[in-house]
Length: 295
Image (cartoon, rainbow, N blue to C red):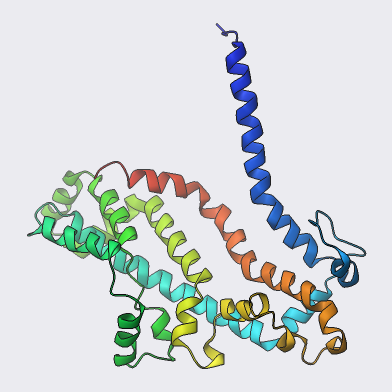
């Protein structure tokens, strides 16, 4: 039997719908503004002062041509892909190992270890000691400085640990009876049953590494090692598009093309993450919720 909605229920649903539409528009509008601005005519874009919801003037790809003509963008793309891929693989592997060890019921001093692990999540030595450690290891101006120091995240370890604890212990006991060791149990039983959590950890690490620029600015000095985010920072924060315009026929019109190049560079830098996210989004909520069933 279908129940008739009360007046209060109808008002609640209307307010809820309006709020959700408003939140959705607040999230989508900046993306649409940047996207359509990157396709706009540079002269019309220079005159515009409001939000762009459609390409201004005649749609053009001139900005993207200027962006990809610059070798720094292409080189930065390659560096970023290398950093993201390496850090994601290493970080997922290390977090899996740590999460598996901390999830074992027979681990000695388990409470003490968890205390020190969570303590590092709340407190750190600071940037200067961190820099001194990296310098003393001889990693300054090397790719490894952006990969190894941050390969383990306590937050990710706790998510994996909690997820692994939700897997029945009988599976591990059966595997041990068949002669399986810890590595076999982890990679052939635990991880295959935790695909959703692994997908969440991969997403966390990949997005964090893709958007990271601060440590690259601190540790890297050679421009050939710069990730895409440092190039993007030069264009957006320092307002420097001179390297983008070099060799193009628009050098004399640098001020005219500067806003267009900034929007196009933003799209180029964010497009890969926006394209990858829908494929792992279905695992996101499931993985986080699985990791929150037990504490």
